[in-house]
Image (cartoon, rainbow, N blue to C red; front, side, top):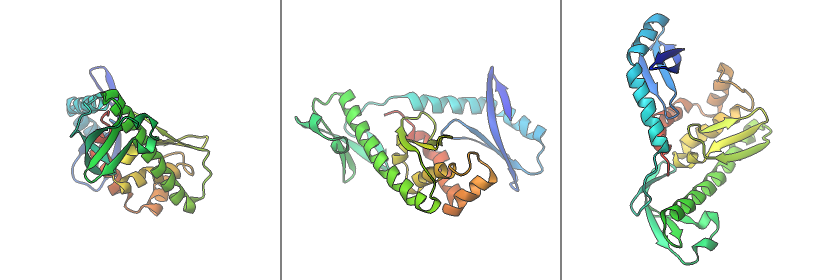
Length: 239
């Protein structure tokens, strides 16, 4: 279903259940989800969504802005890692260029320490991103192996990418792609992303069979998914 607002066609998904009211949610990927009572007619739902069109467009615009905005990388900047907030600490070392990606930074107490040579912002960002990518790849590969022990699905390739709005994807060639930002989310939420994409190896859709497969592995997947919808936007902010 969709609405037209100021020339923009905005699609939305509709879920009807035994709830009493109509609610509208714009998630971290700018998708619009409408929940409504079973007895509500499509015309009534459409009217409610159209009345909220300005709010929906404003919310989607704010999310897009957060995804492209760069914040200054300086001591004390808040950084996410596996659901916790750390403070950036920059450490200058003359041999930092020789460091491996996984040793460009490290966690110490409540800090993420980034080792740099000159201390210029682009160098800080590059070393921090190398470390994040390395941590994400190591963690995701471990979790894919763990959950696929039960599914036993053939995987052609696993890629870690910088995706602007998606947390993961599965292609018809059985390639799994994951957003490096998965490492920023709590482990149980990141597990949901891994399981979600693994289950697409069996069901390349979001059918009832697909969600039953997910639920068989993670019975509480809805709570994990909800956390991502509510908090994922701040994890998408550009570093």
